[in-house]
Amino acid sequence: MKKRLLGIVGILVILVSLITVPVSAGSSGTTALTGNPTSYVSIALNSTSIPLNLDPTSSPATNQSLGIILTCNDPFTVTVSDNTVRAASEQGYMGNYTNNVYGNQSTTSYTGINTTLSQFLTLTGTTNTTTSWYGSTQRILSGGYALYTGSAPVNNQLLAPNTFSQVVAYTDPVLPSGSTYRIDLLFTLTPT
Image: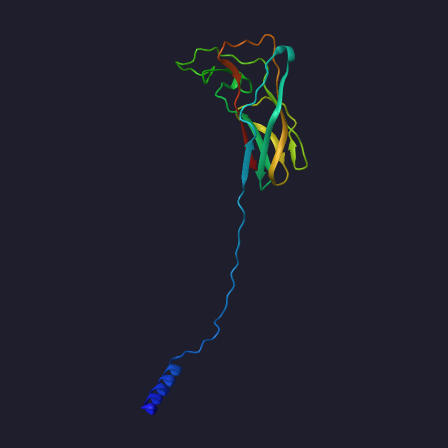
């Protein structure tokens, strides 16, 4: 019985060895991985509301508290534009704002006056090694103008101070209680 069992095992070993397929190395190929990072832009402001003390006895009213924080992996431009819903002739000026409504909007809830300060608001920036302020204190319109230009990528770069300046004249109207002068500005970061 032992001989018979050894014979069967031997036959099985021979059959298994005949079934085994030899493994050989296959051919090889190469592949190239390519890519190009997309532009990345991020702009943040350290404040969403900038107070100005509009007092004609200490004019101009100024505030330097706005910081602009930029991240961009390309050279860039920062523009500023008047985002207030005002007529073209009133853009760049601080105007009446009452009950969450601008003075020039026609709504049934608005009872204030439609007026602006006599001088437009100005904004000056700062310059550092990679970013230049355009050096203009022009009137800020809805189409915007370039405030900064950057010659190289930046990561969380703080641009400060940014100085708002508003001349206040004795002839500028004093608004009724519940009203204030206001302008909304939009800052836009664009890779160039």
